[in-house]
Length: 166
Image (cartoon, rainbow, N blue to C red; front, top):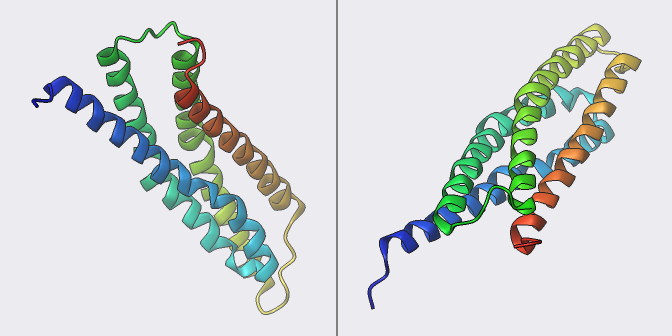
């Protein structure tokens, strides 16, 4: 039995799309526990946490979002779906929002928080580190935005699986 090349490419695209979502976005869910764990152990671990978050966003989430976008666009075209379908347009919007948040919010915020907490640790010297209210407030906001992005990723997965209205 011969498999048409278009079908094979569509299946490969779906594999890449799904793998990018699992690996690239799945890894970001671990970020939600990194800061609380580090703070519970020793706040001197926080610079590592923010560096790790930036690294995961830069080398996992950003490339994954690009792959998700490109393969998703290919699949819509190849499968004959319509960009006017709610599940497709909403998922596309979510991918764009997530990409904007990673590049425009998380990467610069993690760099600022890393620099801020590094200075606070340095200022404490050998004494216990007292984190500033400014740092704690910005860190809390980042955690809330992170929760929102996780929710959006889950909504996109739901839309992709269920395809409401398709």
